[in-house]
Length: 175
Image (cartoon, rainbow, N blue to C red; front, side):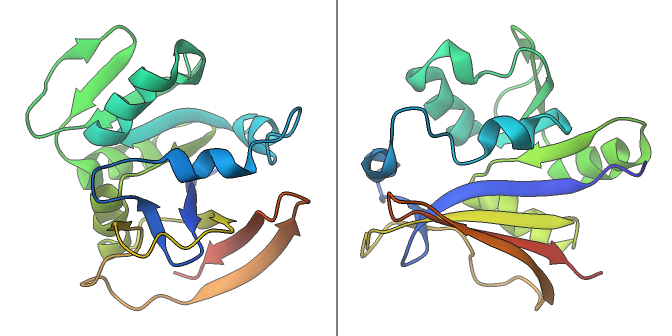
């Protein structure tokens, strides 16, 4: 089995993953008891997680249960090196993903941030893009898809809608 890189992320309807101050409180508006929007099932085919440093710092404030201790976790950072608990810091996401894709294993999960997503899009390294659209207009903030990336054709795989108003869009990236 060839390893695939999947983007699995949430954004506001107008395309933002956070407010300008990195606040992601708008994500909680779709929290529903006993509903994980397919996250648990998605993780069954993942053995590696990649985060940007800001995303990692945010995860640390949310809680231990989100640290994916059962997976290899890499944090892309220009300022931090070495390890933190089970997390390995790495400075070059393109090099890392290229190496990981050549290794045996399950799929690779990227959960941002926007700079990491843009760099991976520039190098056409994503194989699948899964975006959960939150029914909210932030108006301003950190855009998920930044300018300066190449045009890419996506093949629709599926869409899922939930009573909370969240709509999840699944696309395969055509190489």
